[in-house]
Amino acid sequence: MNDIGIRDIASIGVADIDVYGTSGRKIVFANTPKLLMFFRSEDQAKGLPREDSKSSKSSKIKQTIEGITVYKYPIKDDTKYDQSFGFDLFRENLMGNNEIVYKVDEDANGDYIVDTNKKHKESATNNLQSFFDGSSKLTLELIDTKKTFYIDEGFSLQKGTSPLKDKSYYAPNILIKPGKQVIISTKFFDTDSSPKLGQTVSFKLSNSKGIESVTQVLTFNQNEEIIGFNIKTKANETIDTQTTITALIKDSSNKDVEIGRLTILPNKLYEPKLIFVDVFYKKNTLATSSNYVNLTNDLNNKAFNQASINFNLAKNQILNIIDTDFSLKDPTNNLGKWLVQKTGTTDYETAKTDDVLTILKAKFFENIAILLLNEIEKSMQDFEVNDGVTTRKLLPKDKTLKDWFFQCSQLPDNSKAAKWYDTLVKNLHDYTSSIKLGFYPLFMCNNIYSSTSVLAQGLVWSKGLIIPKAGIGNTMIIAHELGHNLGLRHTFNIPDPSTEKGDIKIGMMDTLENIMDYLPDVPGTHSKNFITYQLQKMRENSEKLKYNVDEMGYKIEKEESDASFPPNVIKDFSNNIEIETFSKEICKYLFKSYKAINNLEDDTKLTSHRDKILAIFVDIVKNYFKNL
Image (cartoon, rainbow, N blue to C red; front, side, top):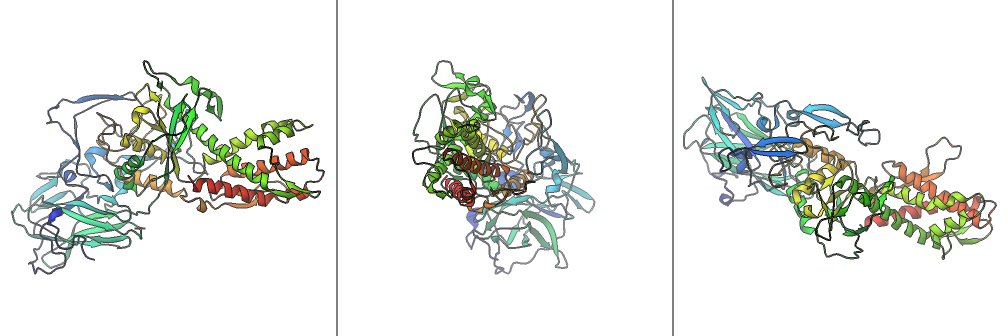
């Protein structure tokens, strides 16, 4: 496998590389302890990020968020990491030792379980170190005859015994989406302080599937030298299993000796859609000039490409809302409760972004339900049935579904028909809001602020987030909330009475850079990365979804029930009960109203059209989601 740098690679900071083995350079054998470490950037190889106690603002800064008070020195960031690929290096000083990861318990349908206090039920799983390959015999201590050296928190070689509780060498994890080239950094440690070591290091790949090329040879001339390392993934082939890059040198008997390793994680690409919904309160807005292309690109390049998740931009939508809009699950929860006019402006503000989000989602999915019912209505107006007496349209051309059901409700013993239309709206609302299809609505509030300074809010493993006006355009805050939508919790617990628990439970801000942490200064400024657990969790949840509606596995088959003659219903791959309920209810309502209004005595012939009607419904649902 050839190195991607071809011949002229000095420009990327790679020195003395003999990729093709043509120089005839003399092999330097290992005679002192050596270690090679991989880093995402040159800055990280120099120990960043870290608290900067020597800065001009050397006093600790007090931060109080969600009832938690933390004192931190200003953070010195890793500014050379472009955030477009995932890279996780275990750092005990940031993540603690033996820190446990907690998993939210799920029911049989894969939904999160909450207790009576609305807190997630959770179970302890593994510690953070378990997400890394620590199987090699390497350690962060180098013992040279009677002298001991160690790698410190800033990744420098020091004399003495390591203060770390865990001195194991954990191979960093890297995740690169298909068709991408990255240049990371390698740092060489040698207890020999000679200025011209000339140490050749070769690199062995355990499996080349999905990988187009990697650097094969580097030569290091001194201790703590940092040199770039290339990896390029294939565009049309994925990495399906963990792959290891092993760094090797020769010993005095010319045998390979391992001095470092890197783990490349599987990189199947997931491509969900982002639906940006421009929200206007008390303004009847029909069109906007909003353009979210750059925001979508930034979310991908600065956050989610780390997990090989690449959001596609769906069509922008507009949602006009008023005081009386409410959540279908709680009609008493209306918008008028939560929004007040912002002093001195024509805008509005809320102290309860979570309640407003609930109503926005309800309205959004209710609108989808009504659009689908409108299409069903048109189809039924064109659908001819032979009812055993005559042939006519299932729904008259001059009747809407709502009108037709109301007409039915005026007949004896059919008063309940007046509520059928609303029942169908709720059925479809419940299905479209729970469908296992990869799309996420982002409610961009053009004239709503948060009076509590919330810049965005999303819920764990739930579609949709609210972005008040002040948060529009804050990429990393939106990335944090989308992380919640993809199943991530915080890296810390929020104290009672909050219901929020963390996937890990270290101190708030201790990560210095994790996207799911709350970090100091301007929100989102320091947010850089996801750790391995988070990458895997987002990918596990993404694997549960489909990204093409044709893959939803819609089929028409008998309902699973105790009935003697169960009806045929629509099912999808996830066995979502809501689509089954809707298909059963709409057929019942259509047939009952037709029979009552047309005085049909025997509906046997009429109901024989059931499967054709259900097939039309499936096509309507698929066409809607194809055109998002």
